[in-house]
Image (cartoon, rainbow, N blue to C red; front, side, top):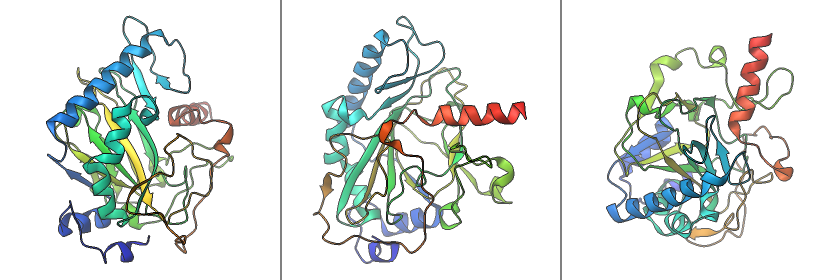
Amino acid sequence: MLMEDVLKHPTKVLTARQRDRFFEDGCLVVEGMVSDDWLARLHAAMEASVESSRTITENDGRFVLEAGHSADTPRLRRLTSPVSHHPDFWAFASESVAADVAADVCGPDVKFHHSKLNFKWPQGGQQFDWHQDIQAWPHTDYSPVTIGIYLEDVGEKQGPLKVIRGSNRGKLYSMYDEDGNWVLRIPDDKLPADWREREMSLTGPAGSLILLSCRAIHGSAGNASARMRPLLLNVYSSADSMPYCANPIPSEYAGTIVRGKPARYSCHDPRGCELPPDWSAGYVGPWAYQEDARGREAAA
């Protein structure tokens, strides 16, 4: 669904002003949206996942590990597709206020696409270079939205999500380098000239919902604090938005209608979108691509 059509529907959870701000800035932080009960359930699911990672010694289809991970001291970058690994993650994605908020910015009919839980372990959690999301999983329109939830309080030291305000209304950048390598990053010298003045840190207490447009330029610094920064991310789209390519993080729930009804016709934004590599054989995660790109730059 196109933005102008979404705006014809009244909001149910967000205020009209909050929705307008999201479409203007490409991001929004809403505090106090998630109940203590949901936070407790998600914490328990996260802790169970961390515990099960102790037996893992290398990246697999479930975990992306950080350097130094061991059975005694687990260090994780990502739990891939958490909705596939614990029922409370899917219950939250499909039954909670997160899906209601998605309906306010996608339109009343909402489809689930994928999920991930990014940890940022204390004292060294990996930075995430500037990038845009939609080129990794292009759709027929730009309704896809990421709804995140901070499971812990997040300030500047924890490496919060950072967004270049208003970049959702600008151009899409190539996620390939000049040699045709998929890098999923935008070098600083390619960013808008005024990007530093428009940079926003999306901080907030545990339970804050983070909305991120699929076109917004975003990234994050490393975690220099003694506290973990777990960020649960669920991606939704309008029901009439159709993916062009294989889902990089597939699950049994991909394509499930979580609000409203299925679409009878597809929506097509006239603006095109760059296509990613073929993910049908598997997806290694964004850090590997970004680290390879930085290595090539250093060697040049």
